[in-house]
Image (cartoon, rainbow, N blue to C red; front, top):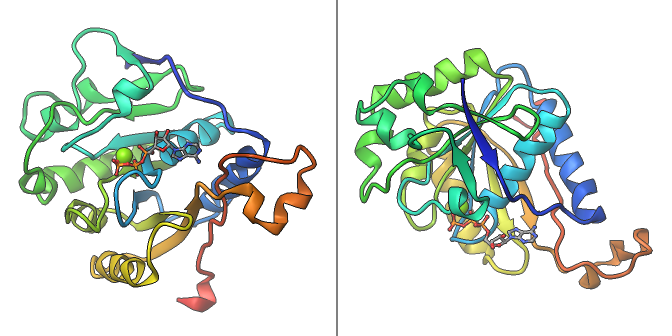
Length: 240
Ligand SMILES: Nc1ncnc2c1ncn2[C@@H]1O[C@H](COP(=O)(O)OP(=O)(O)OP(=O)(O)O)[C@@H](O)[C@H]1O
Ligand SMILES: [Mg+2]
């Protein structure tokens, strides 16, 4: 398998690590049939890519076979932000979907405890034609046969429709919500849009919570943290 080096992944603080552990445990228990999970949000910069990268690392550290598919073919920052280097030319999802490479050419094993990654590849101005193709859903199915979990990083569904399209090829979705940013009305619209895919919303990650505004601060005697992530909530089977 081709190799990629992730040169930069900022470690989380104590509270962030605790919250991430909870999120990952809940994802692990999501169910045998919930393997392909898409992450989206209402608007940009709420923390989808940040969260999904940390979830990838956390699950791999626990010994799970996990792959991240960067489906933000419009403007992905993943490679640049984490200073990812590959052996040879970096190929990705866009190359695969237009038939320029095989799946084995764009799945990279990383130095994050063996977690795998498919970069977005080159920028595509309108990726919808690629995402609603049979090649995309068959690719996710193939990955699900080979990995315990397939994490899919998508653009914000409140801005472009890609995530709802992607959700149709997944088993469920997770909404990343930046604390104190999104209006309830917009979040409801986002939820409605994702539910139209016919696949369940598995939960919500409340991200970038200002620690000093929360009473839970008292549980961490280190005092003040800039950000932490929390609140992964999975519907129980009784709720379905
Ligand atoms: N919990 C967090 N703690 C600290 N920084 C964070 C956290 N979540 C996100 N960030 C920072 O916020 C910025 C936006 O995050 P990110 O790129 O993951 O958002 P996104 O939802 O993927 O955006 P886009 O819609 O553009 O894809 C980045 O600089 C990231 O490092
Ligand atoms: Mg992103």
